[in-house]
Image 1 (cartoon, rainbow, N blue to C red):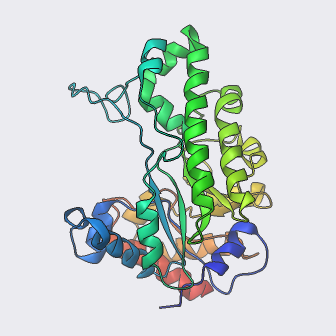
Image 2: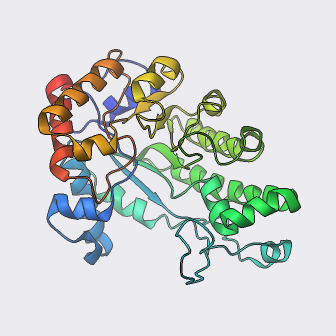
Length: 339
C-alpha cells in the first residue's frame, strides 16, 4: 500500500503540477459500506474510537485524505406521517414568516460541532489532510426545512421568505466554512448540495444564480482565503449551470452519472476550469464482473488522467448496496494503471 501524500491530491485539485500517483476521492461512505469493509458495526462504536475506525477505513484503501462533514445546528421537524419520504415534507419546520421569525437559529460563532474535526486532526498521520465541510448544502437545507411542496408554494406566494431562508443558510454555512478553513489539518473545503435530477435542476437556473451560487462563492472564497481548494459535490443534470458553478470559484466537481454526463465528457468540456473527481458509475460497479470493472476503470483513467488532473472514485458515493470487493477491484486497477 502506498504512503499517503495529500500534496499529490492538492496537485489534482489545483491543476498545478503532475502528481506522483493517482489519488482517490469519495464524497461519503455509508456506515453499512464502512462496516462491511472493516468487519465492525461502526454504528455501535462512539466517540474517539468511532473516528479512529473512520480514519482507518479511508487510509486503509490508499487515500491521501479523510473526507468528512458535520451538519449545522439546525432543527428539523419529525411529522412521523406515513408515506412521507425522508426528503419531502416530513422534516419541514418553516412554512410562514411567523415560523421563520420564531425559529431558533444557531449562534454564528458555533454553527456546527467542530469537535469531530479536532478529534480526526489528532488521529491522522503526517501526509494526510481532512477534506471537510458542512453536511448538506444550501438548496438541500432550504428544501428540507420548508419541504419541497412548501418551498414550491413559497416561490410563488412569498419569494421574500425564500430569499431570507437562503440568506440565513448563507450566514451559517459561511461562518462554518471560514472557521474550518483556518484549521491546519483541513487541506481543502467541500460542500455537497444536490441541485438536480436526470434531465434538469430542481430550481430554474436564474433562481440558483440569485440564491445558491452566491453561497458557493462565499465558501470558495473562505477556502481560497486560506490558500486551500474548494470541492463541490452535486448530483443531477447541471449542464445549464456548469459555467456559473465554475464562476463561483469551484476548483473540483464530484458526482457524475453515465446516463447524464459521463465524467470523461465533463473532463473534455470543463476540465480546464474544474477538476473532475470520481465518475465510476455506481450501477456499473454493482453489476459488473471483475474484468468489466477493470476495463471500465482503465478507460476512465486513460480519458481523464492524461494531464494528471483527476481523482478516481465512484460517481456518487459508497452505498450500502455497493459490493466492497467490486470497489476494491476499481481501486486496485487504479494503482496498477497510475500508481
